[in-house]
Length: 114
Length: 114
Image 1: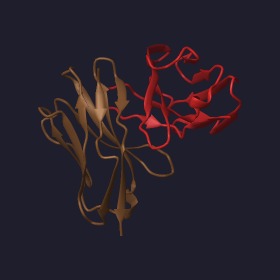
Image 2 (image 1 turned 180 degrees about the horizontal axis):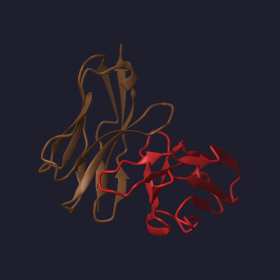
Image 3 (image 1 turned 45 degrees about the vertical axis):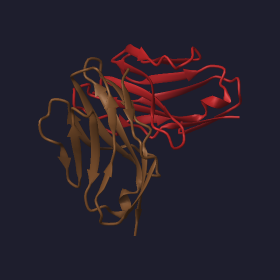
């Protein structure tokens, strides 16, 4: 068990480009969460999965954001037509899904949109 | 809508003193859980403590305790005998047991002074 891993650690892109991030949760974890965090702020909920099913997507999230977890294991988060306001740390977390089960976080992907 | 409020953006505390970080929450659900996470400058999210809404006793984990006052909808974190290594951002989070969605507050930056 190597924990939650995210790839890449850093991504620099030009405005208007598409980017995709990957998250590999802890293998037996069926819940997977995506959060966005800007400097000095708390993690902002984006979306989450129970196995391959996406349970909810934040209403604050534009249609440019999409996430998948095709086989209930790894997940991808894609941002289309990136904007400078998308610059943030994107955090992935996983859990067993039981009531008091804590989230295990990855190290995040830092996105910079120029 | 569910909400977590942390009203202290920053705190300065002398080493070895106890410190209380405030957290209030808003939910109409009866079944939920509350977490506290620590995020040092390195960026990783570290689980500290969990309290279920039906737990009758306040949770404790080493130097951390959670002062849970359900009627006031508050879940303050108490750190006893603070140490320099406690300097970090601290986030309060809530899980709604009906759907396991987890949301975070904006955080409190704690500075421990030598």
